[in-house]
Length: 506
Image (cartoon, rainbow, N blue to C red; front, side, top):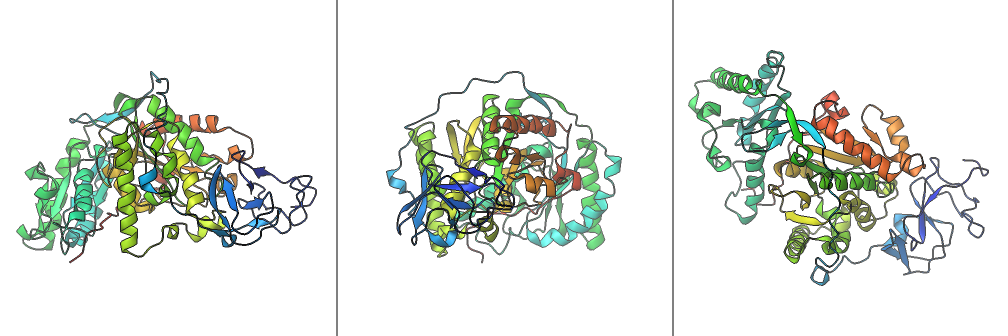
C-alpha cells in the first residue's frame, strides 16, 4: 500500500479506543490515521490500531467492552497485537443480571415456506438420507465395507440424497453409568431420530457391547437391526447390512418434498477460523438472518461455550425469564469446572489463525461470536446434545470445536447450519447442508467454490448488514428446499461425527 492510499479503519462502538485495519495489504508506517495520529509501524489487515496512548494497565476497548489491558506503554498509531494485551477476568457468573432487558417481540413474518420432507413425528427434514448407526466402534470396519457396496446402489434410488454412517468411538470400554455419560448417550439417541432420516434408521451392533441398541433407541424396527455376532462369517455380515439397507432405501425413495412453513426449520449457527472482521461483517449478517428466522417462527440455535463465556453478561439480560437465565449460567459454570479439571485456561480457545486474523484473545473473539445471535430474546438453553423442543432463539451449550459443536447441534435437531469464517475452512456435514459465509472479500475471491455468501462486502461498504442478512435468509430457504446446493454439498465435503464425551473411558 502506497502512502497516497487512504487507510480504511473500522470502529464498532463510539467507546472504542482501537480500530480495525480494513486495507487488504495493511497500513504502512508513517500513514495518517487522523490529523493527530500517524502509524508508528506496519499494521496488518484485520489487526488493531491504537487510537490513543495507552499507559500500562489501561483498558483497551472494542465493541464498547474491555477486551484487555495494556501490558506496556502503547503509543497511539501503533499495532495493538496480542502480545501487548493482558486478559481481563471472566464475568462473575453469580453477579449476572437475569432477564432484565428482554427484547420486545419482533413483528412476525408471514408467508415464507420451503420444500421439506414431512416426518410422521411432525418434524421436517431438508435432506432424505439413509442413516446407519453403529452401537459400538468395533463394527465400523465391517460397516465401511458394506457402505461402499450400498453407495454403488444409490443410482437406483434417485430420491435418496446419500448415506450417513454414524460411526463413533463410543459404546464399549466406557463408563456408561458415569454421571457425564449422559452427554454422549443423549447425543446418540437424538442423532438416531434426526429429521433427515425420515423415521428410518439402520442399526449395526456387535452384540456384546455395553451400549446395546435398545439403550440408544427402543423403537428400532427388527428389520432395521443387524447384529454381527449373529452372523456366520464376514460376508454374511456385509450381505445382511446391504440387504436391510435396500429395504430402507426402497421406503426412503418414496418420500417427496412438500410445502412447509418456515417455522418448521431448525437452524444451527456456528463459526470457525474466525478473524477480527467476523464480529463486524459475517456474524452480524447471520444475526440479522437469525432475527428473520425467529420472526418467521423457526427455531435457531447458537452455541460454543468458550466463545460465549466472556460475553455472557450481554446474553443473560436477554433471556426470556430468570429460569432460562439460570440455565445459561449453569452451563457456563459446568464448562468452567470442566476446563479447570483439565488445567486448561479459557484463553486456550483462540487458534494461531485467529490471532493472525487480528483476535487478541478469547474476550475479543467472544464479543464478535455472539453477534450471530441477533437481537431476539433467548427462549431456552440446551445442554450438549439435548433436543430442541421450542420455537425461537436458543442457546445450545457445546464445545467450540467445529466438529463436536456440529455433532451436538445435529443431535439438537438442526436440519441446516450457517457457518461463518474469516480465515477459511472446508468444514461440512453430511447430515445437513452447511452454508458458508466469509467475513472478508479476500477469502471469498480466493475460495469462490467453497464460500456461499460474501459478507466482506459489508467491510468495504458495498453492502449492508441488513442486505447480506436478507441474502442469507433467502439462501437458507432455497438450500432447505433443495433448489440450491451449498458448496460443501456440491463437493460432498463432510467431517466425521465427533461425540463430546467428558465421562471416563475404562
